[in-house]
Structures are given as structure tokens and as C-alpha cells.
Length: 182
Image 1 (cartoon, one colour):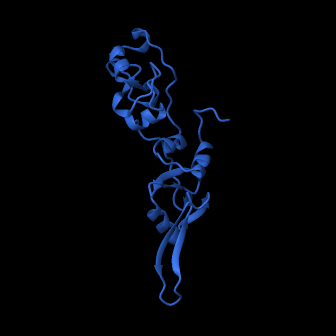
Image 2 (cartoon, helix red, strand yellow; image 1 turned 120 degrees about the vertical axis):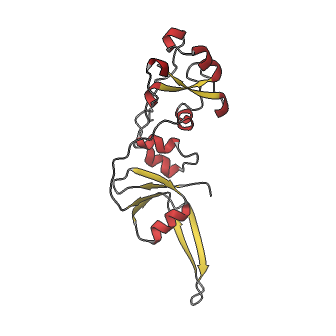
Image 3 (cartoon, helix red, strand yellow; image 1 turned 30 degrees about the vertical axis):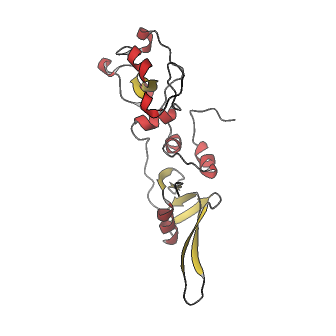
């Protein structure tokens, strides 16, 4: 099972992606406050000798757990998440590429004190990044096709998982601010 369970804190903020076994342990210990979504999977245990019944536990796609609510911020930028944010598309030429043919471009180059942050970085193909070199897009005569943004916590959790279930996506979409919603 590659699908993971979305774990929330009691305030409903995403905390982590956990595997089925961790979710089952949390459920069996009584630490889950509430769940959401249609149970995607059932984990089956052994057969009880006295009754002949097999134990099982349904694992919902979203669980909210007890504990302290900490202010969670979006993690630092990484190439994997940056490329996912920009949908594997070079934001200069507009073509899609596979990961190994992409690079991180700093709009304001690091040599000009440009920050290594979400708002100053875009996905670029190696050709466009090489052409831009150590210049701003204006100096290189290149135009950005989209405005870079720092993802919200919900957007980050969407970007960080390749197998988001429909119920999880519906929940996470409530915290998206950087996309148009129909």
C-alpha cells in the first residue's frame, strides 16, 4: 500500500502523512478524536481462538489526533517540492520536463543577494537557466510565465504526496489560496 493517511492535529491542521500501520496503532490506542472520509482499507489481524472471529480495523483516509497544537510553518524549499509546485514546467519557456532536466532558478540571483526562498525561486529547464545565467529575467530579456509563491501548509501537504486520495484532496483544498477553485 503506497497510499498514506493524512494525520491532523485537533485544530484540523495537517501534521504528517503516516502509513496504515501507524494510523492503526493510533486508532487502537484511542488517540483519534475524529476521522473523515470513506474507509479506504481494512487491516486484518489474527483469528481469536475462543470465538473464531478475525480481528480487523478500518483505516479512514484522514485522522485527527489528540495533543498540543503547534504553529506549523511550511518547510524550506526543495527541488522536488518546487518542481511539483510548478508542475514540472519551465516557467520561462513553458515546456514540461522530467525532473532530471529541470533546475532551480533564482529570479534575483544569489550573487545579487537573492534569497533561496519560495518567492524567489522558479523551475527552469537547464537550457533556459543557462541562458539566463547570473542575471535577472529583465536583464536576460526573459519573461516569467507565472508568479512564484510560498505554498500554504495544505498546499505543501498536497505537493509532498504523490498518491493523494479524493477525500484527502477535498479536505486539503479548503486551505488552498494560490489556485483558482471552481
